[in-house]
Length: 159
Image (cartoon, rainbow, N blue to C red; front, top):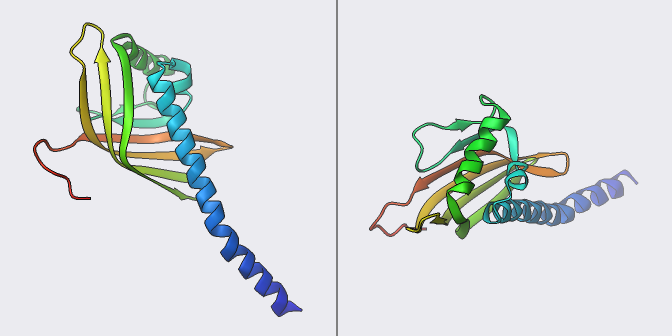
């Protein structure tokens, strides 16, 4: 009887694990897409709700990281709101993005195009390499770290 119980447990784990991982990765991908939809829609509260209270943001055009834990929420919100006020539209377009879930941590990495249409014209699109780490708190994925760096110009990136 004990051998049969162990076999059932092992089979349950082996058969259920790939489905659970696929489901978790699907949830991670959907959460990230929702955050990017909030960015595109310039929904300040919606977009900020995807950021963990201790998040760190390293953008391609910043020298220093923006540390949410070291700043007041209002300062973080003002920074994002200023960006929204200066743009007609902003969108992150995944080019080659991967998703991985490790327990309650999610990792997103790859290449993406950031399309920005600023007020006053002169829109620009630029390709970036992207790494985003998320933490699942309760039933919600929240961004903990975001790092984007410029793709080298004039060079083909080897996948």
